[in-house]
Image (cartoon, rainbow, N blue to C red):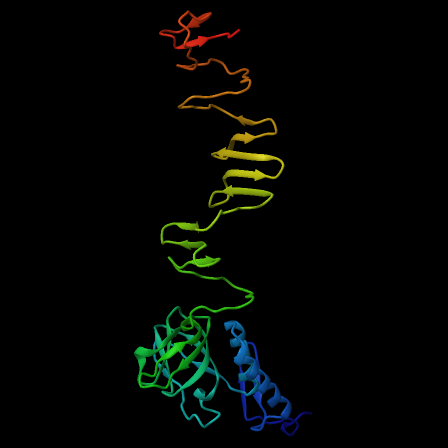
Length: 315
């Protein structure tokens, strides 16, 4: 039989739906302290936002600096501020907010210089803003379901900034995305130097804008379809040809011998043929001013009125 004497004790235990963290002792072992120091050194040189958040969370877990704060309704929340105490919510480096909101709320942190990682794990589709106590207007909103590295500058205005949102351009050698990339209307995806290639939505239409050189679309099999993918407009296949469709029915295709038109071909200007034009089983031919001649003599045969259509044999 197991009794309480078999169980150990801890200073603090923090549980989430993913992890449980125990702080066993006030003093960190040399091995843990060395790992903490290594992570701190890595943070000094790391520039990828996602990697920084992961390192900060790892650091918080090693130091048992993780807090779960229950919020709900539409009431503002002030974190406990006994900063010298390990049990104070604001002494933690990673703070997860949970609960169901019925309105927008503000979470107040101490009005002093510090940085935190907040995880907005609330539900209810309302806004959570983090601000320094007494300085609501200078806070920063956290996207629901998202993480944010927040910094309170500790100055007279006690601004709270979302570090990654405020830092502007982030330069990285490689970024691996495991979720969606969301850009609002008139926000551009710029590729190349400056505005060489831009992809964006202007609020009405989606636009691919190439401002430098040629825009090359390369592929052995390329198909352009309707939004629902139920109707084909154009197909292009390597070593095969190009097909153009009307209402999902092929009307024009290129072949090794030239091109084939299925159905009527309407021409509003001159057709110039440098080789044989062959037709079979086409029924009647209606032509006006199809062939003209400068000869003053009558053609070998004619039909229609006013020279509408001539058949001429040039010996």
